Image (cartoon, rainbow, N blue to C red):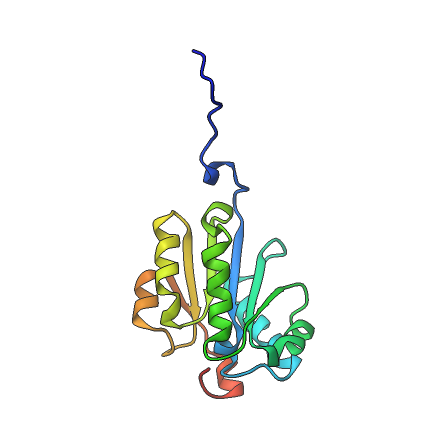
Amino acid sequence: MYTAMAEALPLKKRALRGRRLVLVDIENEIGGAVIDEAEAALAQHAIDEAICLAGCDQVVIGVSHIGVLPTYLGWPGCRIVVRSGPDGADLALLEVLNKERIAERFDEVVLASGDAIFADAVAALGAAGVSVTVLTRIGSCSRQLRMAAGKTVYVDACAARFGGVA
């Protein structure tokens, strides 16, 4: 049978398989602005203990302008997205989720945050067949986000050392 147009596989089937994206709202994980590289290193350690970060994982960290340098120094090799203002780090991560064809490029997404602002994007990824895990502190995950995620993992190491909620 002859066709004038070539048929392509759906993008999800053409993409590399087994890829994991780890999105980190670091200010949420440490309980405030990142002002010291040790805070970023502690967040990396806590997340690594919870989900066993692999060298092939793509890590994207959302942070305000205040925490760019300490985050860069404390968590080498990650991609940092920056936005300042109320919910700035959240909005920077949402831009990644909404504009970078995540469902076509990754089989698994881990979101280290408990903020409800991510619930719709997480639900959309799940509906597209992406396995989504939310990594959050005990008592800090919104009900909407918990319901949207396929799995929720609780970690409480970071905030206990540094204080409140971002």
